[in-house]
Every structure is written in structure tokens, then in C-alpha cells.
Length: 84
Image (cartoon, rainbow, N blue to C red; front, side, top):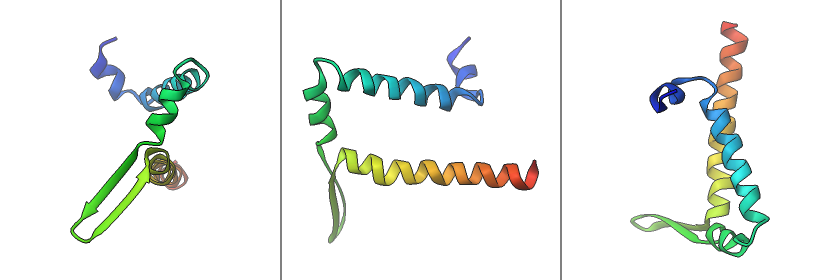
């Protein structure tokens, strides 16, 4: 299976999510756990003129990516309810 065909399939996001979750669990429970924790605690700043937000990467993931994930899940549910 070529890579383009894989990413066009409906199951690609779920497979990638499972793979990255497994990778995170393996890293957290291995000798690399200190490096993994430092990576998650790395400060990331978003700045626009006088406005700035600085949070650790873990909070960006929890706040931003999880909000986007549940928004997409909601859109998917809406499509399934109205379009069948």
C-alpha cells in the first residue's frame, strides 16, 4: 500500500492516533521518560504584538488539540445524524 493511498483512507487518522498513543506510552515507561517529560514541559509562546500566551507543550496539547479533536468529532456526529 502506498503512502498516499493510506492517508486518503478513512481509517488513517485512527491508526495514526493509536500508533502515537502507543509511542507515548512506550516513551513514558522507558529509559527516555525524563527526556519525554522535558519535551512536554517545554515552554511554547504565541505572540501577536502586545498579546502573548506562554504555556508548556502539554497544556497546548490539552487545550488546543483536544478542543479541535472534539470539534471534529461533533461535526462527524452531526453529519451522521442529519445525513445518515
